[in-house]
Image 1 (cartoon, rainbow, N blue to C red):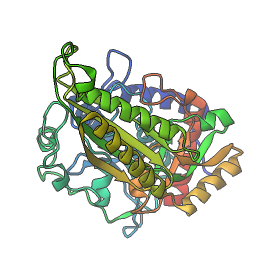
Image 2 (cartoon, helix red, strand yellow):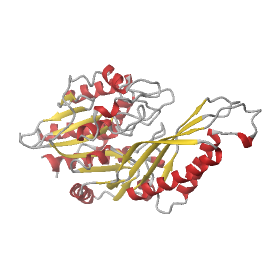
Image 3 (spheres, one colour):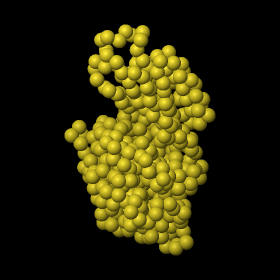
Image 4 (cartoon, rainbow, N blue to C red):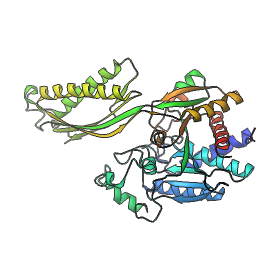
Length: 414
């Protein structure tokens, strides 16, 4: 049995490092905002690179800004055991999402290197540059470049909400210039991601760890309704071509359809833009987001097809038109059975409660899951709250996750 760090010391280390990383991008509301290539993101990656070197890892970036801390292996032919998560956040997010997986990986790597020296297989801790899609309308830029599912051509015309081109932001952060190695990898043995659940299942069922079997598929759209602006006081209701009224009916119909689904499909409209966005003018244009998720890709497709047919009917009734832009379509992905079994064996041996479960949130693991053997492991989230400053995980659960990761990395790399 491998030696584990003392519980009190480990607890203190995890909490200290979580607060340390959260200081990069902490906002006035107590949340954390680190958006791809922004100053807080750059500072966080630089601080993590220094921390990697400090604990004995060799730090390097790739050309899109993924950061790696490498522990060389004794077998020069062995492939890399990769572990970590994403450093970016949503706007005003919590301090655990993504960050916990990076901090846990750093602590695990430091412990293993200190106690056992170099591994047989190389271990790399990764701070993935982007997962959330919070600044630019794309997701998994970090893992997608490592696995070859994303490429530079895909961002040529992409801009953030302030009109900043993606490539300009990347260059200003020091990436995309050919100064670092290209991101595509062919040397990965497996990927292990430790993450907060971002849901209530583990807490409600009194389980300590979630071993993920599948990550749901998801689609995201940007939907624009075009109507006609006119005077709010002089245009009779029956003669209006109101983009806002149309969008409101569409969203209501969508929510009723999703709530009536018996198989757990979820649909969310979380963002809306209105033009001209003036209180006494009928809206001529409304754009809203749509996020649909389920473990069955066929189910997602059928739901969207049916919803969009209903949207067309609603638009026709209002004398408006509608345009759809699908900017994300991620299939449901299964995690590696052998890695699930290895995690379950560790947990059973240690008498730690766990359950096998599906992830309703998207993670970098779903990108890696089609590229190399991948495991996604959850610790509980209090109240299921995430993407919020109220995001919280008990210190005992944080400790258990780190100890599990230490044990798994030892089994896989030593």
